[in-house]
Image (cartoon, rainbow, N blue to C red; front, side, top):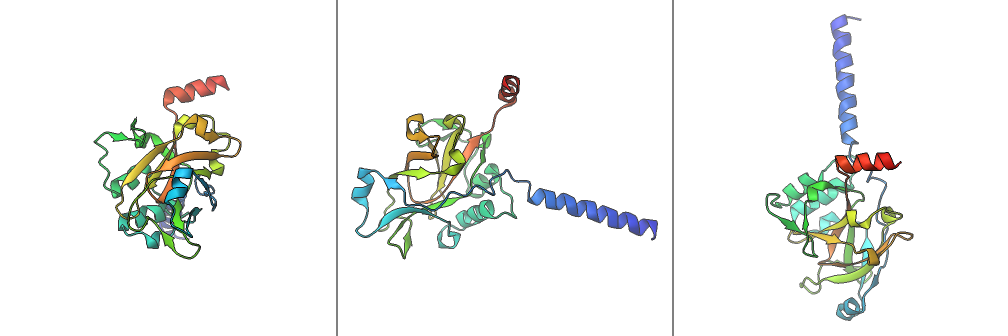
Length: 218
């Protein structure tokens, strides 16, 4: 075989391999799906539920979202062949990363210190047939107890936040989890979601100093 041709083929193979590695280089969220469930809701939330309808957690349906950018980011995160970072997601949704961002509890947060550990799941209102993302056109907060397998035996729930996106406006919310509202054995958390729509779980990655301390402890 001509040496130049062999070299070209070899370079193409290396380039192809590098591309394949990039496609599947996202963190290990691909096997961590938030399972479909009918979560328990608080008494206050039960009172606002329309007759014949209930809150459920289900597989996402991006085609039902009104905001195109929300469709894009949810599809990317849940697609095993695509890659999206927290920064790219927030930039696509036009979140100003230069401005201070706060959680729903009012605490400042730097979302770029976090990474995804689950795919998106949908929190919706349904009668078993139709799916809705509001209450007769009105956005309302709902308090539910959701089971998330990825949270079982998590070392520190303070490093975990939920990210939720309003499928109509693209507004992004960060929801903290109190220790008393978390069961590490079952992965259950009780939180108030500011709206209905897709949500995922983020975990704060350790800093260099924290990594060194953990290594020494081991």
